[in-house]
Image (cartoon, rainbow, N blue to C red):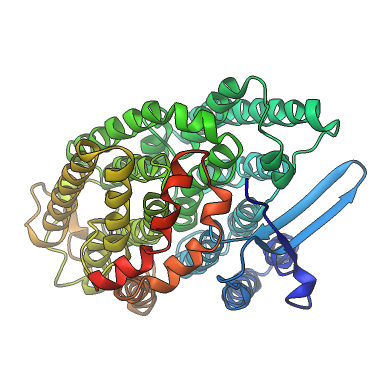
Amino acid sequence: MDTITMTLWSETISFPILSVMTAIPLVTMLLVLLTPPPAIVLRLSFAGTILTFLLGLYLLAVFNPDQPGIQLYEKYQGMGLTYSVGVDGTNILFILLTTLLALLALVYNMTARHATDRIHVACFLGYEAILIGAFAAMNAMQFWLWCFLELVPVILMTLRTGSGQNRRWVVALLLQHWGSGLLMVLAGFLMLGFGIMLSTDVLSFDWLILKENNANLEYATLIFFLLLFGFAIRMPLFPFHAWLPVLAEQGTIASAGIFLVSLKLGIYAVMRFLIPLLPEVAEQWAWFVVTLSLIGIFYGVLLAFMQINFRRLLAFAIISQTGLIVIGLFDFNSYAMEGSIILAVSYGLATAGILLSLGMIYKRTHTAFIPRLGGMFDTNTAIAFLFVICALSTMVMPGTPGFDGIHLLLEGTIKGQGWFVAIAILFGNVLAVGLLLRAFQQIFIAAPKRFQGAFTYTHHTSSQPSPRNEWIIAIVICGLLIATGVNTSPWLHIIDQNLESIHSSPSSMGAAHPDALTTQSIISKDH
């Protein structure tokens, strides 16, 4: 097994950037709670979010993709507790995506009725800090604690600013699903830590120790399924998805952009904790996970076709996307894993753009029902532009990052699972293309099918987002999707940085190692 090196933050920069990026939103949250004037609340939230985003760009600038191992590593111990964080090619893009979408969601939220609600803004900032802390965590129990804390802002934002009438029932459903998932993950991590203690005589949940001492782990299969099912609820993977369509329909769109990043937390957990810590069991049961994922791809698309509420439609589309990404993770070769990571990041940005555009539509029309919408293209150009570019990206069209991601995923799937699974993925993607094109045609091109009252084609009012805010969001998201789609090589270079040593499986990944050296050359040939 390859030894993974840890490069301390002090060897690269002059301050612990990951801890600072986590602390800034938390400090800003406390200041917001202590600040009565609404105007100050908005300024403080923007200042903290912009500073965190700038630090995210600096993090990307100082990260060295040619240096193997975990970089900018921090570890502090005291009172029997351990705090450790670090970045590599697996998590750095997710951290950057979190800071970007937090800023864009705040721009979207500027003119909402709760834009200066201190509790809502504080929850939003706390949510950003929780996601950064979870993505950067290099300790299993530390990761679990962040996931547990995530319940607080989600529940409060749903209760205070949700748009549905059954918000308390939604919160109860969320607690039921997320709570059971958290309990399973906690049990799995505890069994993992105590199982390692039998061979090392030291109880530790440090990721590096768990990875390097898991060869003779007892009850590995039970631990695998506890973690798999716990993470599956969080992704969500079929059939653990029931909470997502309900929350999408009843919850708040104002913070949906950053919430979509949190959906990728379950996928990241599989990449960070499940496959690297239990590689042999993961390879043994890969067929089971791939089967669930294939069902999820078609189940999500077919259920999405049946929806007339655009929030539920997007929720089922995300379930379909999740199945596609998970197949790549369990192909156990470099092609597929690279494709899954870049698709997870691309889908996170694109689906956030779609949901924000739908939120802008909801503010104008006060309805989420597609038959009541139509003909919005001429009067809502920014929204239409944002929707169609993001939809094309989720369709993995050429010129978007999803195109290279699906290319790599299919290459890896053919190697790992065979042609049948690869063809099924392609067919599922074709259905997704039809789904999103149909939604675009119904919302923006076709005439409304039902009477929708006096708000049909209203122009901007003081209660609606200004065109400037809409165009800022549209230009930033679409520009990033197009720019990264034209040249994905830098992103693949970052993802490649630690892929082999972290996600190596005793047989499959070892055999695929020579292929990993040529991944970027394959992409460059396609361009």
